[in-house]
Image (cartoon, rainbow, N blue to C red):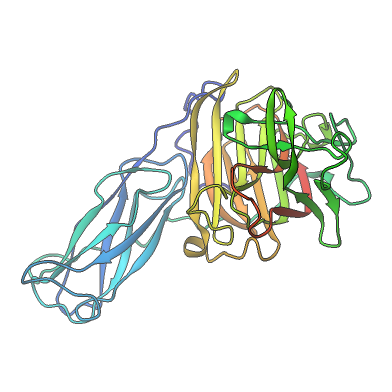
Length: 398
C-alpha cells in the first residue's frame, strides 16, 4: 500500500515535465510546564508534500539570565523528523526535561536545510511557562515506512550462467555503453566506459567472482581518445536499453550490491525512459567525487523530469542513512537497493525498508535499467577500491 491519501491525484504532471511544488518546513515555538518530564516541539509543513521530507534537528542552549542548559535543565537532543506523503502536517520532537524552572528557555533548530522541502522558520524557542497551556504532542495519523515486497511477475533475473554483455547489447545481452555512447563529458565525467573486446589492453571492466559481478574502474596506463577527447580513466556500465526483458512500466527493480570506497568513483543504479531522456529515476547514486560523501553511511534517491533532452525539474534526497534509518556499511557488505514504480507513487527501499517516496509524474512511461560506476576525478585514483560488486538483479512487472 502506498500513502494513505493521494492529494495529487488530479495534478497535471504534463507528461512528466511538471511536479507539485515543495512544501515548506518550519519549527514552531513551544511551552512546557515547570516540573514536566518532556517538552514537545512542533515541526510543521505548510501544505501536503508530494515527496518524503527529512529534517535533522538539534537542541541549543538558551541565552540570557533565563537560559536553560543541556545536562542541567534539559537533555541535549538530536533527532530526525520524517514526513511521508499523506502524513499529517504537524509532528513533534520530544525533548526530555531535567529540572527547568518557570521562564527558563532553550531552542530547537534545523541542522541544515531540510531534504525534500523548502526551509521556513529554522529555529524556535522552547520555554517553561507555568501560566500557559503546554504544547501538545502529535500522536496519530502517521504512516510507518513500507517494507519492500514484490506483487508482480518475475520478468528478469541476473545469473552468472545467463548474464551476457556486448558493445551494443541485444535481446539477450546488456550493452557496455550508454544509449548515446561511451562518455558523458557534460556530467564532468573523466572516465570512458570500457569494453574489453574494444580495448583488450585494459584491465577487465567486468568479471564474475565468487561474490558476484565486479564493475571495475581504473586509471589507464595510457590515455584512450574517444570523440576527440583523451580519457585517463576507465568507467564501466551495463545498460538495458536494447534488452527488452529488463524494461518495465509499473513494477519493481532490486539490486543486491557492495559499493566502492574510492574517491572519484560514482556508482549508480538508475532508470531511463525507453522513449528518451528525461525522465530518469535514480534508485541509488554514490557521489564519491564529493568530499562530504561517505560510502558507508550515505544514500540518495532522485527523479529528473522533462522531455526531449531538456530537464524541467529534479528532486530527491541525499541523506545520512545511519542517523535517519539505522543503516550503514554499504561498502563493507552487500545491501539491497530497490524501487517500486506504481501509478500513484514511486517508492525507494534499502534493505527492504522504505527510505523515500514521491508522487509518480511519469505515468504511462516505460523504463530500462542501468548499473554503472562512473569516474569523475583528476586525481591519482588509487585510494580504496574503485569496484562495485553486484550479487543479483531482478525485475518484476505488474
